[in-house]
Length: 229
Figure 1 (tube, rainbow, N blue to C red):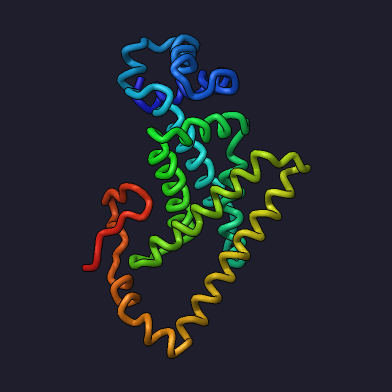
Figure 2: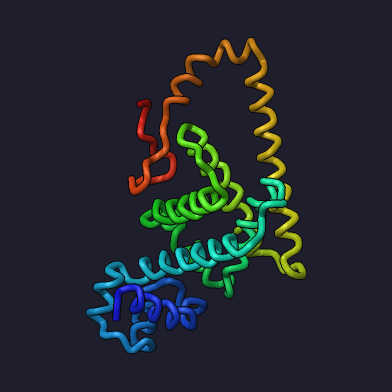
């Protein structure tokens, strides 16, 4: 049995225990027993136990989202609607909110907060790439940073939403994306303002030299840059 197969089997077994025990050591031990995996082998695949399994759960949701994006016909959609579709597809990939809620509790702990932020960043990066983003300057970072904010607040809203078919969440998401589009409009107007453009010419020139990571290059934590080239 390969490592991905072992992790998938552990994850499937964990689903029954996370709502009660959270992404905890007790949950991980119970998942090992239920999956019938030898403990040493399970620890080799998930050295940090529940933390690695929680991250695997998040990545599985990302994979389901990418499948939904690839299967959809987005050509006729406005770009803002494509982004909304992607975020909605990511949330609809979740079959039990409690697993996400427990995951947020885990990654709110200071020791794991950086990995939680990295997981959100990776989700938003995957969305942009799937939607055809080819930016390689400061826009690479600002797009992902902005979408991370939209995604995170939408998840929090969605966790408390009991409206039919989560309609309130999708309306909230649409408003948040609308806010972002307004920011982009203001930025465009700023660039057209000669006085403002002159005052900010130096800082903007510096930021414009920032380059996105190259394929295969590690990005580290959100906001890490490669510096002016």
